[in-house]
Image 1 (cartoon, rainbow, N blue to C red):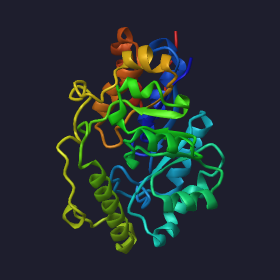
Image 2: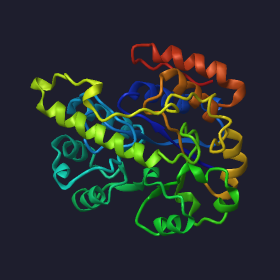
Image 3: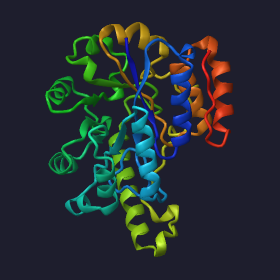
Image 4: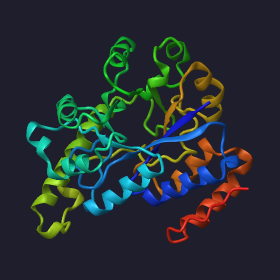
Length: 313
């Protein structure tokens, strides 16, 4: 049995996730049955195509190359969150995003898509990439979801308002190609979610455009220069969301979802604090009786200047 997790973020949390992956490899007794890192998703800063979260900052291709080679060498694909819904034709030629796509174009890495414009461009220009249909599409109609499953996607990430609606889930086809977002911090049934994705996309574009105008990549961009975006739910911790109707617990995964045929699970947290992310990983993937030991082992190695010394029993 494989229980595949898709984790955040390969750029800002590169060392964090590499240490965690090493612990999974060397200390499998810590982990629940079948846990596997199926991908690490995210974006490199200054990626104009990025969506779902605004990711400011700058990144050079040398660092990107190190991340890509290191994770791929360890059997972990990168999935690029190129889900900006506000892209226009002129954005397709963005140099940094195309350079990244060329750098990772080895048949192993993947792209999460939302914009039909960008999806068509990637299919035609970079056909080696597997494509994932994003939860940002906000598909909440069952028949539309069935139509989405008929398209050429390796994975379709469900809108998390479907979570725990087992009368619907058990009737869906191709469950092994469906991905469940287990720890959504957004309010269930939020009517602003699509609008927030739109604003986040505009913020990413505004940041990248201003960065391109700045001298020597020096960031002189103020928050007030970007489209306004505030969500009071964005900083919820793993402990804040357990009571939400969309929350999927570890027991739910192994006792309900996996027996039904689902085996793809996404953990959100690209902008989460490391403490919250660590507790989320412990909660979902580590056996309860080993959480304290695993947490201690992980933190020791995380502070070990990048030298991973995790050893199994």
